[in-house]
Length: 212
Image (cartoon, rainbow, N blue to C red; front, side):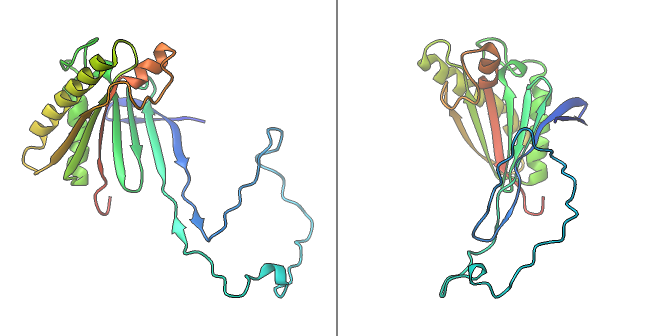
């Protein structure tokens, strides 16, 4: 169900192209239950369509009732590298990059690696493209070690990423919100190393620009 795409010289796997499909809601939205043995592409029925009586009282709203205002539900798109090192999430209003700590830092360190600057520079370019004026940089860890250590390390890592972004975007008047959450808000199961690796991350998020 995933499709591969190439972006800035790296291979991405579109693990979930659309997490929540946009839908036009008119007050009531029905969802049919799908069974595993149902054919996802059923053969169209040859039977004549059912006749509908437009005057049927069951098809009319009760007196005084009105349909809710139509609205477009938020769309969330997720693109993740095959190894999970970088993840990009987009909604109608925001863009968020999540970088695994291993691609930015050494083990239990807040010192940026030699490959980190290129990753952060690509995010800075997207911030410029969106003309974002407020950027959030949040650090997270797994649940190994003490929570106090995780709080300090996650904040130090967020500060390090912020330092590079502020250099790249110094002329744009961007303001920053920088936080270290430690082991709070895991996105995967800390019981496995694979899950802990996903939880050790720095997230950079910002509003989408008008017209983008």
